[in-house]
Length: 415
Image (cartoon, rainbow, N blue to C red):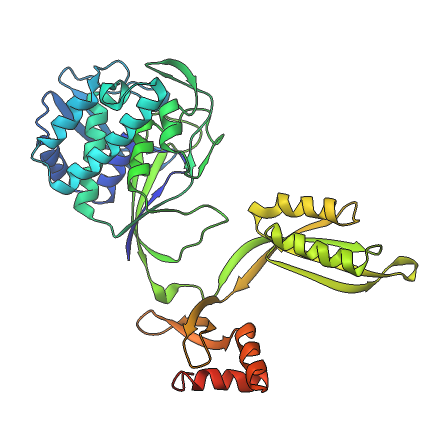
């Protein structure tokens, strides 16, 4: 699968995105010709090789007929320029000679911005008059990005966590904390981080590009991907900082043959040694742990200090469930404290299928290990669920092993 990946470790803006696309291999002359189909006059797209902290890439600058371009600072906002209404921009794109794919992407990005601005100002979407994003350079940035995506036609688009920066930003609404209001709304629900830079690093234009385009976000420590890196493009940002102000775009080829043979999860193990709870209380504690989202709970007999018999209470959980599991330990056990240990859990892919037959429908779980020449997962072993085997064993007065054979036999000898 041909995947386009946005590496937003230094945020993202429209000009950085255009520069990265050209560095990745988009023909600049073809890009300019397509942009000319907008019918806008009085602009010029300058593309030049530049570097930030020793990293080379392409810097994209949109100039107007007077030679003016975006001012430095504020993440590249274009606030000195003219405003345009959402209706004007929509009409411009819809009536242009752009390819339908590029039109659709550009309109999607602008629609998201219009809806975000509508919430910020508390007015109807059709009444929105854009400030920064309505300026000439931002129209070129957004439409140019839509054109590049339509040219390249990636099968899948992924992105890293999005660096927002920190501090304040100067825009048409005055000086505001990072992220700007529209940026925050556009990125709602997406993985972001702050503090890597003392500036605004993700602009509303960049936020709209990601929100409208990305299929999946690869979050550090929570997501993994196996791929071949085919080519990388670098877009150079406006400012020179102590860390590289760049956006990396890369072509990746995902190959099933490179996929890991098992899944790896980062989990947390909670443990406590307890010597003063009854069997009933421990049973109730186990129920509460599972209700709180525990993946596994185990009680292990111990010989504790003063030769007292005790129990090691061991609970496995996902990071997002940890607070609920901690609360269970404190509220429903006699422990005044417990241990937390980060662990990795390796597991095979499992799938459940239903087996119909004369003894009713049974559930079968299959685990997979590796792939075949076609990239399909190879079954390793299968087992009928205990409850279904036990049901048939009781009904026919046979063993669990006999029940499994009977269930498979009633389904035409399925193995």
